Length: 228
Ligand SMILES: Cc1cc2nc3c(=O)[nH]c(=O)nc-3n(C[C@H](O)[C@H](O)[C@H](O)COP(=O)(O)O)c2cc1C
Image 1 (cartoon, rainbow, N blue to C red):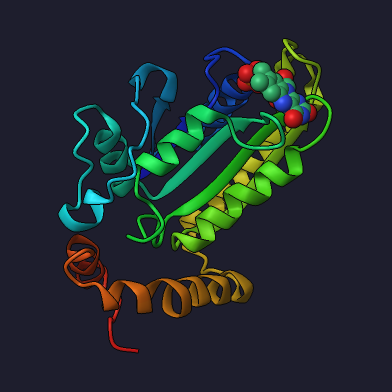
Image 2 (tube, protein in one colour):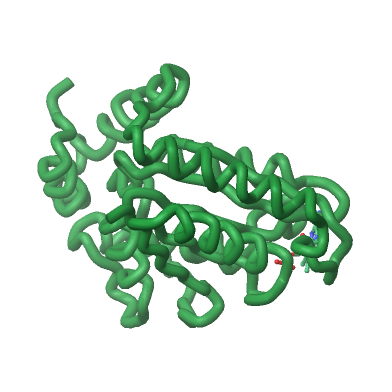
């Protein structure tokens, strides 16, 4: 059974991003043997990251809400689709807050996960939001496996356009196929992750083993060698 998690970073569940994500989910489920788990971030009421960095030592965020539920769902997935509207040329605050709370990058929480970015926008900036998501995927060990960027008027329904439905169907098919074939990361993605992890992050973590206790434990579990 292929497990896919779909995370909606829009505060509007039935906005353009949410509708596109639902359609992605339906297309994937139609392939059979696919289990889709939706995460509507707006339902999780996540508090903001307070910057204590305790998660690096203990492995979990000390704030008592459901951020770790999302992390566990991702950990059990083969693929993750993350969608966001463009807010001031960036991801939504809702999604950025989860990215911070999820302590994703240093832990390499996306290692081996096939990742797909969905972005909607009205005027400009959608491509840079997709770029930001893909950068985060690469830094966190994920395998960028597709993107869908759609420009559309605010409050309009993307699913009224046959072209959009066709594009989603095609892209969902490709994403499914890539996971099914367990296609490896391309050379550039491997290189970016290598530099981020081994050249930038690792020397720092190794220098402060107490501060990064849980990170070092996690790396051991996922076979990241602390010796160069
Ligand atoms: C606070 C805010 C900031 C926005 N900033 C941008 C922007 O920088 N560029 C843009 O093209 N659209 C911007 N938009 C429009 C949304 O990205 C666009 O309407 C999106 O499709 C909404 O997605 P949703 O229906 O899933 O909520 C902004 C909307 C809001 C509410």
